[in-house]
Length: 260
Ligand SMILES: Nc1ncnc2c1ncn2[C@@H]1O[C@H](COP(=O)(O)OP(=O)(O)OP(=O)(O)O)[C@@H](O)[C@H]1O
Ligand SMILES: [Mg+2]
Image (cartoon, rainbow, N blue to C red):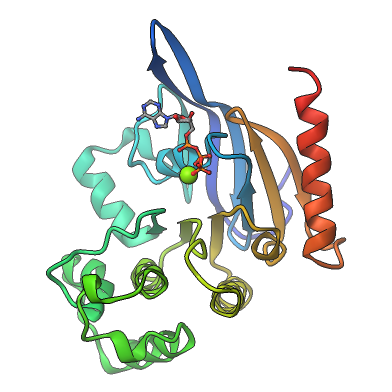
């Protein structure tokens, strides 16, 4: 047995993860025997064409969808062994999730939304926590929106509030489905910078789904999905810029489409 590259504990490990959906009279594997490991300090961008299984994989990892077969472990704990209630509590404490649709609670203000996971968990919010959170909200440029309700926020602001909410409980892993999908270039790059900093300085594991090479280039590693399987898995450190990464991504897309 080999040791992990780093001494950081494994944040996420999927083994043979599979999700089968019915399609007409047949079945369809949205995610197929996915083996993916993220160490504590990993920052992985998941790319792939629309329908390649990115969101399904993320939902399976978050335990929001139960797999047809296979296993997900978060920090060494098998989530299939947890009851729905245990999983809800575990998710609130250890996972930060940003969905493709932001899922903010409409009758709560931005700030109440952000603090919801902490409050639901009965945690006290002391002065040093508040100070740390405020600095983070400033970085995300949502300070002025904290008193507003979700329906009065722009798409990009809702997205950043959802990100702040996902991170407020100090999760072991952040799972984010296109967290920059609705942002302009500058805001998107700012969010990437914030995520990279969280990863670098706090060792937080990040699994982020994106279509954009300019976002993926901030990650340490890119995993490309095709038809629910891993078609490519490469480090980003060798790339000069997003254009080089995009070229590598296209190459994988071409290689893997040849056989079908
Ligand atoms: N609940 C479901 N029932 C049946 N099929 C589903 C279900 N959810 C997803 N699928 C199918 O599984 C495949 C993968 O969907 P998924 O949402 O994971 O794709 P994606 O890679 O996130 O795409 P996008 O980039 O468009 O968000 C698609 O073909 C989709 O139609
Ligand atoms: Mg998706």
